[in-house]
Every structure is written in structure tokens, then in C-alpha cells.
Length: 227
Image 1 (cartoon, one colour):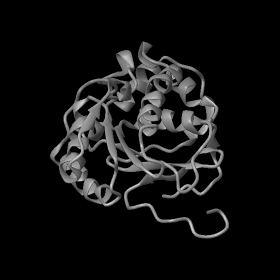
Image 2 (cartoon, one colour; image 1 turned 90 degrees about the vertical axis):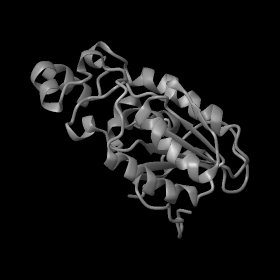
Image 3 (cartoon, rainbow, N blue to C red; image 1 turned 180 degrees about the vertical axis):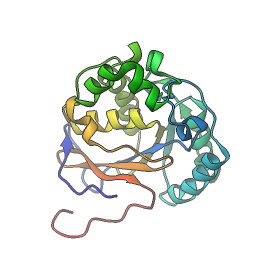
Image 4 (cartoon, rainbow, N blue to C red; image 1 turned 135 degrees about the vertical axis):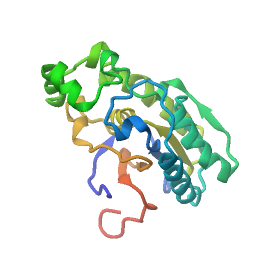
């Protein structure tokens, strides 16, 4: 699914030309994904399906000739990143700042169990209120640690370079929200990422723009007046 709106965030001056591109890639499927368990910082392995998803997506992303790969150090993200590294010959930098949201007692619970045991807390989070789910991190705290990692690695790229960031659904959403300059109450308006799908941020004259969201195919150029 492509995002064609003019959503931008301020990150300072931008070079002429296409600009840098950041691909935020969610890890492949795990058994806890299938069971709808909140993983958070729990280190869960990929399933066989998840490995196959990573290999398929890696073949597509490798064709974009990325310049660098940075990944969460949790195995589901690290092993997803390894599939792209094997095709591109790039090293993977692992950074714990890209881990999923720590969610305290929610971790390991199914979606239904969270609603049954922590229904009011869950509802407040969905309303966009600042909630420490399960006694864990605020979404803004996740963005505080993850977004600088992405920016630090993006700044090392050539002017038209591509960075692949391999992380987790919640962390990717908060990072996108922060880089676009969206109010944190509105981050939930960014739909979730399917396993091994990705979103693409590109540099524009006024900052980062969301070019693709929850994509599973190669980005297509925007043709027309909005280019």
C-alpha cells in the first residue's frame, strides 16, 4: 500500500536530488505472532514460515542496492537482517535501541488475555493516552531511543543512499511518527506492518516523507503532480 500524502517532518536541510531513503523492515513471522502474544523484548525465534518470508523479501530489497543495514539485536530481527546481508555482502550493525517496546507484564500474554486482565489500560492506549503498557515503556520513550539510531545511520549515507532498518512493528510505527513530526496521539493512525513488510521514508525539501507503507513489493515511482 502506498502513502501519497504530503506528511513531512523537519530534520534540517536536505541535499538536492532524490535524497536519502530509509526502508523500515519488520521481521518475519514468529510462533508468538501466530498465537497473538505480545512479544515486546522477549527474544522469540522466527518460524520456518518467517525464515521463508525473510528470504523472499530479501531478494526484493537487495535489488534496491542498499548501502547499509542496521537491525535490532533480538533474534527475530537479526536473523531477518541476515538474509539480506547474505545477498548484498553488507555487514549488519545491531543496536538494542531498535528493540520492540518493553511491555512489562503484558509480554507473553495473548491479545484476549491483555484485554481481560488490563482492559482499561488497553483502551486508554488505543485512545492515544500516554500509557506504560504492563508497566513498561511509553511509546514516546521507544521513539526517543529508536529514531536517533535511524538518523545516525542515515546521516552516514551518500546523498542518494539507502538504509535498511530491520526492527519491530511497534518500534517502526513510533519511529515513523517521530521522523514525520506527527503528534504522538496520532501515531496509531499509521496502520500496523505485516510480517516482513516494510515502509519507506524519503527525503524531501521539507524533511522526511512517507513514500510507502506496509509494502511487500518494490516501491513504484510517484508519477504526476505530487512527484
